[in-house]
Image 1: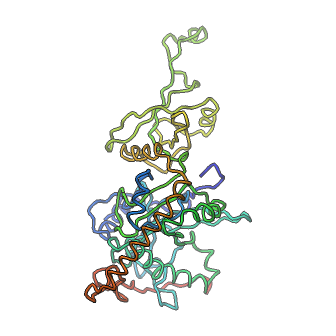
Image 2 (image 1 turned 120 degrees about the vertical axis):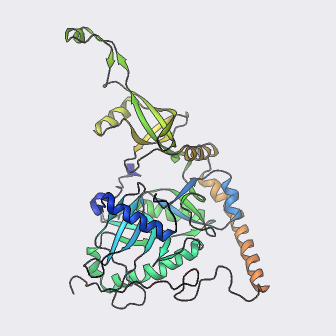
Image 3 (image 1 turned 180 degrees about the horizontal axis):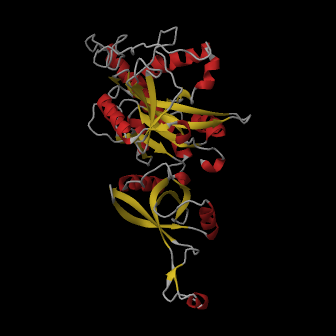
Length: 430
């Protein structure tokens, strides 16, 4: 997190925010590609990991990856004007549903030795992160952990492993091949794109012993994400994406309102003609915390305990603090404490999210609990695998195996996956 000296990327420094009318047009295109009417943020949102989820990990196949401390974004590969310099355009969509144009990205199609073709009508889900290496070198990366639409074909109803396999095969492989052949091109890209390293859900010990320590050095880590392999991509809260954080790091984003105490005028004030009690803006205020109930309705949830030193530090940031979004953790005396300002968020958490986080705080599922549960999770996984294998062998009628990938060039419904319009793009420096 920010305290570790890992800085989160500044979206405005790498992208140009689309004007409302243009953003509206893109929101309609994205909704159309996803087959939905809503123009809201189309990403899935996880639930907090509670004790009951240890059973869920035994019931279904889950993948696990480390939760990077970055900025969650979807990336939309949009169609530009084929005759222009930008036949392919790329937009990052943040949690506030703002669209930012990012220049300098190019994703060629598979089997194109010239690397001139490109993907359009594609939407991937991921997070933007600043990786800082031991030698001080910094590199911005977009880690992809899901693929919703590929070349106009929706993958939303495919299983997670298939969605990721399509992304790796069709997008990442040709992208990496291009930079392998033209390494000098790397300097022109806004950021590098990689896939998120994913393990089976029972590999928790390896996650804690090897993966988290190694990634913590380069980009900070604030937990694990478990994602169900067999369920479709779900926009909005998805009960099958579980966000685990070390118990002391389970946090809530509140809307904070400050209430400064009144003081009675002293002799100096009276000499200046002040006779009524007035608010003392130098004093420590009461920090009221609110959760979201509906769009513009908030419920008072408690207050934030602030020490004098913390208040001085907050003031020294020289940022407006009243009516802001603040991320809080609960200390061992059950008091809400300040963690950081969330300037990337428009609103505090919804009451349902807060209740889910409270369950996690009370259940206190720690690292040791996850490691202890791993053998049972593995046994259940292997048993499901064996049953599936038996079903297959038992001859389910010789038809296509359920969940087998479609033939080459076919989409989920046997519809051809578009191969882009193949417009040409000139490389710099050729």
